[in-house]
Length: 215
Ligand code: PRP
Ligand code: URA
Image (cartoon, rainbow, N blue to C red; front, side, top):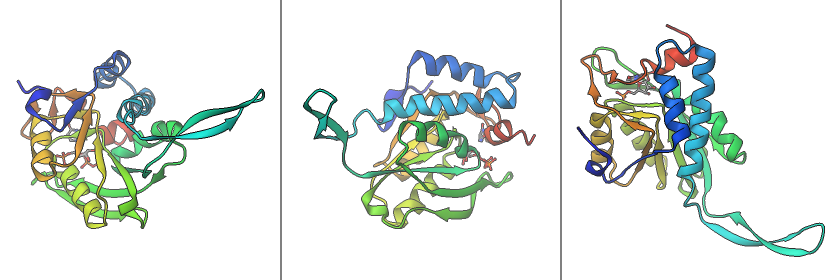
């Protein structure tokens, strides 16, 4: 059994609300509408935790009564990069917390036989070196998609990248960490293993199909 301590770049959130919602997400009887709402809510709650180290700078503010001093988030501009399709389900929840974030897109799908990712779309803001990227995908299975997505971002000039998923398999964390040891990985659960078809066990099934009702 792998634990977070086996993977130095992995953080697993233990927040009770996230664990409660994740369990409903795993349930095979959870319908598409609820599944979508839960992915959105968990992503928002995870973003609250994964942004807890953002730098702040002091700023003056005029309250209705007097001048005061306050804080605002400083540092690099945040950019969310969902891996299509399933990563799209995580975007809106995070944007509710950080409405000024930009959104890039990376299109990848797994070849069902080789399980290797095939890329079909890439669009991120031009000033990639000035931005902090959060790559979003509910599932980190073999890690192929995540590793290719991060490599594409680095080729575009990105040098500050975090990867956020809901469920990770040890195989995926190992592959992503080996390819990109500089990337922090956040998940809500580290599951047991992959099956022969590359699905995470116990997992939650095919995230894209469950989100968009395409099964
Ligand atoms: C799923 C998932 C990840 C990928 C994870 O997408 O959303 O992107 O598989 O698997 P990996 O770690 O083994 O690469 P899928 O390829 O099914 O595409 P979809 O989101 O368009 O359904
Ligand atoms: N992609 C998914 O959607 N689910 C898995 O379990 C593995 C890859």
